[in-house]
Length: 243
Image (cartoon, rainbow, N blue to C red):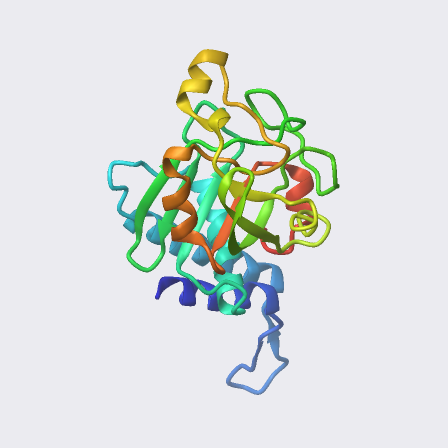
């Protein structure tokens, strides 16, 4: 599958070294600069990601922006190769977009199809219509960026819900302790957004409309990958899964 090729390319980027090459006369060995190797590998990875992206069937649901997808794919490939992620579904949430937009996608990476797109709420202290502040702290009531593995399903005060395990230390690894989960919510509906000028907000959970929450949860439960994106320089600097 394509993500396996991409994983190998990532290994080239992160573990490249000097390449010695002897000339025919047995003179001094030439050394290829590692910066040049890294640059070439990044070009190959970007091209491979672009090819995969362009092969995805939208199913009239449209795709996320390529910059957002490329970050998601980069981490997904590494987590899948390590066995941390087991299912071939990638959920992408783009918190650079307005909460009034359907800014969540579920992509079947095996069949290369978008299977669901939906509204999704951010934490109430992350912002109003747009999310621009993020935290890993308890009682911050902010969303946390980065990569998650989906956990087990349970019945909570919002009905069917799904636990999440944050996979990035210092970024979202406190998610389970914070009870950051996926659940349905009335305030995550188009009706609420139309009446209030923006979607409602959660205590930090990526809440979705009740109209899709059961389908969504049952599709991605049990070790699939969820990525919450924002073009935050702080996140990019701290994350070990994106470059």
